[in-house]
Length: 158
Image 1 (cartoon, rainbow, N blue to C red):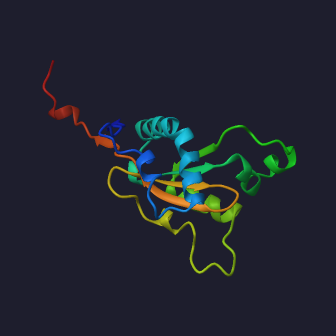
Image 2: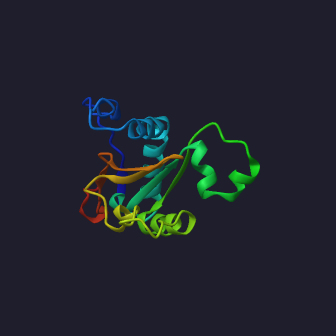
Image 3: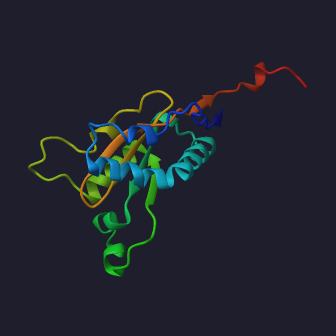
């Protein structure tokens, strides 16, 4: 199996969504945070899906703001200094779901599982992205990743 990460070059970007009137300022802030790591995330998804058996639709990304690191990592809380950039965790959606439930469990009063989107695969050619800051969590489907399967037996001899 070969994987190619295609980026949309036809003007569809997060920048356009930032102007949507229905977004809260918190959602805009979290989308801007994702923009700071967007290129690296695309490269890491490509690498992960190329080097493993993980399907793009089963990949999930957690982007953690510097201020929110203390919510997930004890060492960040003990160190006291915030790193200058967002942290990115990438892996299988089920493992990320388990990690979030262990590190930041939903409250008993929560009306639903805030990480439930990770229980189902993303839409075709997309990965699930969760963006966490000190105030809230934003979940989105991201990308237009193209997966190409090659059967060497069907290829013409060179």
